[in-house]
Length: 410
Image 1 (cartoon, rainbow, N blue to C red):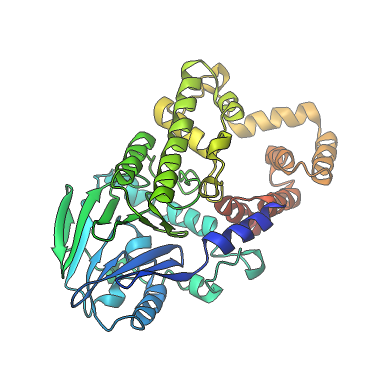
Image 2 (image 1 turned 120 degrees about the vertical axis):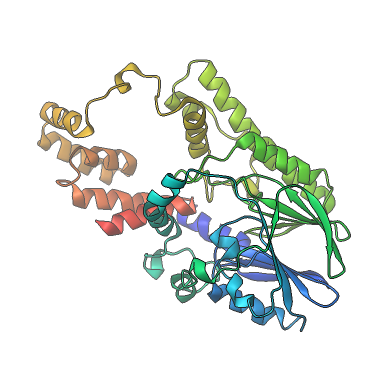
């Protein structure tokens, strides 16, 4: 099975846009755009956990919700402070009285401001927003919905009226709940625990695929050990219903326990093996070649459909060892252009062109791409060919879209 078919199968089973009626009081809206939300019906109103990516999807949620209850949304709880959880909140502005969010971790102001444009562009690349319909893996969201999913600016988002700094319990309109700080993909993540329903809305703490450690988009490092602790903290509540920020709900006490345990153990395994390799003196390439998920972690919710084990290893290296690989030649290397010119003089364009052509013919697309980088202007056509082939072969969604988007740029 090729990478594209694997992604289609994964999208059909885990990314399908769907409404799950968990019980009479909990309705889960899965994969409306790039995120999900949960409606908890109280005595006189609805508590909405997250507000999906944009007003396009939030209006759909509101319309469908009206088929189940005529009670208004009075409370919104954000599981984290991200566009995926806040973007559609303005749609409920006419009824909402309370918005709850977790206190944000202080981040460097200059970096956040100066890097905003490039990070947004990378997000566009990795989500396929600029690609033709035929290149998109179908997931139940129409292209028009996706294209307009940036319609809601931050000005339309509802800002929290109540900030959570520590774990707390409360009752909202007859619904007992606890808000638990569970840092994971983001340090601000909170889990909404509904003890009477044995349900945990965990946001992006778990999402049915090997995590994307955001190397492509350039996001902050995710502290793996803390993430694992949070997963086990939720597991120990013994939930019977797990409601993630995307993919599908998980139900059944033993099933949920197994999923959370395995997810945490798998991440911790990669962390430990990577750090051990570093301490043993292995270089980054050697660690990547030697570390992979053992068979007991080969499950549907740890397939590399959004992130890759290799990316996690690279992130762990950078977090703990910085930029230096440990190779003396890379301490103060020549500029890439200078080194490439020297290689071309040694090889000659004739032999280089022949090798690139042969690599493309033999399906060695990564080799072809890297050889093209020796003179990317001269080999622009071949580089585009390699990028397209790699993108179409990839079984990782963000990787596929990024490669195809860069090919389209050429």
